[in-house]
Length: 217
Image (cartoon, rainbow, N blue to C red):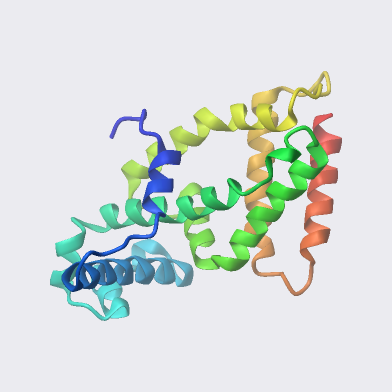
C-alpha cells in the first residue's frame, strides 16, 4: 500500500450508509456487516490474535465460506472495519460548528466532547481503533503501518491548526507537544470508558483542557 492514500476521505466514504438496490445485494451487505460487527465485538473482549476466523463466523452466524466471499483474510477485514470506525469518528468531528474556529477554549471543549460522545455511542468501535493505533493487534499490519504514517503526517499540522496561532511556551517544541497531547488524550479516553460512573465527562474535559493549556502556553 502506498502511504499517499487519503485515509480521511476513504474513511468518510466507508462510513456512508450503503443502500442496496435489490434483495440479493441487501443480503450480501447484511452478511458483510455482520462479519464486521462480529470482529469488532470479539476484539473488545479478547486479544485479536486469539480470535480465529471460525470465531468470527460463529459470532456472525454465517459459514466460513461466506467469510472468504467477502474478505481475503483477517487483514482485509481489519482494514475495512478500521476505515468504517474511523469514518464514524470523522463524521462526528465534522459537526463541530465553524463559528468556534477562533475560540480555542470552545474548540477544545467541543472536540474533546465529540470524542467522548463517540466513545460512549460506539464503545466497541472506539476500543477497536485504540487497539489498532496502540499496536495491540497483529492483524492488518500493513494497514497499521499506513495508519501510523497517516497520523505521523497529520498530528503536528492538526495541532498547529488547533492552537490557531497562539504562542507556545518558549521551551515547548511543537512536534513533541503534539504527540504528547494526542497520546495523553487517547490514553485518558481508553481509561474513561471503564470509569464513566466515577468521573463525569465535564470533569474529564475540564482537566484535559487545564493540562493542555498549562503545558502548551
